[in-house]
Structures are given as C-alpha cells and as structure tokens.
Image 1: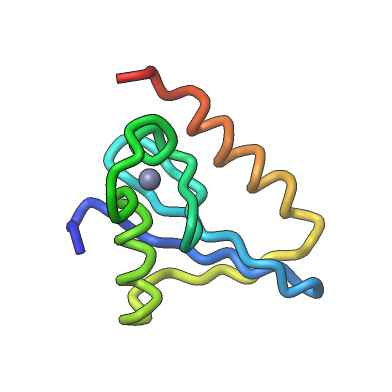
Image 2: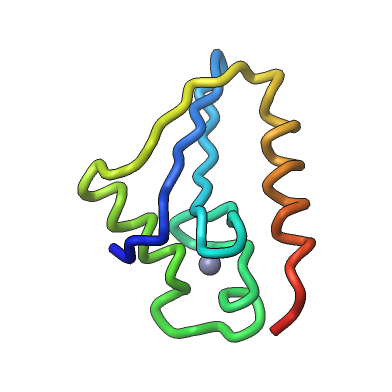
Length: 92
Ligand SMILES: [Zn+2]
C-alpha cells in the first residue's frame, strides 16, 4: 500500500452501518468495493478502479485500517464532512 494513504472504517451503532473513508494525499474519499467518490473513478474510469478502491481492498484483506465506533446520530455529520472535502476538490 502507498504510504500516504490511510483507510478508516467507521462503524455505526446500533445500525451496524459501515462507511469506509480513504485518506489520500490531499483529500478524503468515501470508498467502497465498487465505487469511489474521487475524480479518477468518476471521470477517468480507470480499469481496475482507482487507487482508493485498491487501497481499500488491500486494507480489508490485511486488516490494516483504523476503525472507529460511532453513534448512528453521527453518520450524517461524518458523511457530510467527507463529502464536502471531496466537493472542494478542484478538477484536474
Ligand atoms: Zn478513488
């Protein structure tokens, strides 16, 4: 895994909802096995997915991620925060 990429798993209780965030060099991205909120994934459609999806898959396999347990009430706050971060990115 690239050194400057960190994977965070937010686990929300009591619903059990999970949100994965991949922290890149400049921005955080909400990432899943089949999607990512980054520019590369959405506009460049790289074969094999973007670096965040690969980082997530690797992290899940190796267990190399940070996990935070949060309350369901915090879900929208986290989601908005991470989404704002993505939306503030300048197109490259
Ligand atoms: Zn991505």
